[in-house]
Amino acid sequence: MMRKTFKDLILILLGGIIFSIGINFFTIPNLLSEGGILGLTVVAHYLFEWSPGVVNFVLNMTLVLVGYKFLEKRTIIYTIITIFSSSVILFLTENVGRRLTNDTLLAAIFAGLLVGIGLGLIFRAGGTNGGTTIIARMLNQFLGWSIGKGMLIIDVIVVGGSVLIIGLDKSMYTLISVYLGAKAIDFIVEDLDERVAVLIISNSSDQILNEITTVMSRGLTVLEGRGGYTGANKNVLYIVINKQETVRLKSIISVLDRNAYVTVHNVHEMIGKGYNAA
Image (spheres, rainbow, N blue to C red):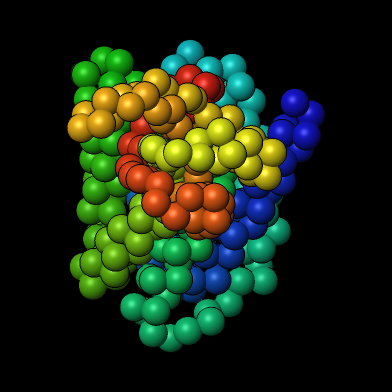
């Protein structure tokens, strides 16, 4: 448990560093904005020259205090750690940030990717970026909106309001940045952890089972099957693994039984810990 907590804290810290680089080296120097509370932080810097780190901390902590009951205890703790660490990193890097490119499109692309990767690592560790998530949960509670719909509407409102500050062209580039950021978050949170379900029918099922449990250190389920044509009874092996592990699994199966029948299916959702392949 302590090891996992330490790993989560490292991911949160690394995520804060990466997204702070995106803000202070690409977003602000090129007069772009962001969605959600982060966007309000950037706009406040443009209008009043307030420190992004300080504004980010004040806004997000205020929303945590208002909406803490909508989050689990562990999520609240991780969120507070995230807000504090990311705000400190934003504050420490705001004076060293400089424009790395004069191309606004390149700036939007790299800002979106860096912010998305940073937040993705934070979400993967179990934290949140505070404000937008909490507001979305409150809208879900009182108006029945989905979390995704709530976050999207908040982002659109903030980016739309930014038009008055940074102009239409910069706001359009910001939309590109926000879109790429969302894709980067999805990739970090979901695609890197993508699972597949593998069904194996083989005359060497016992040997394959032994190799999977000893070499791959993975558990699996043995189902009783019967051939529709031959009527012969066979064991059917069912296993859920990371998509990256399929190459190794196929190699094991091909060595033990080249005639094995194998099907691989994408797993869209898992509930419970029975097939955890982490």
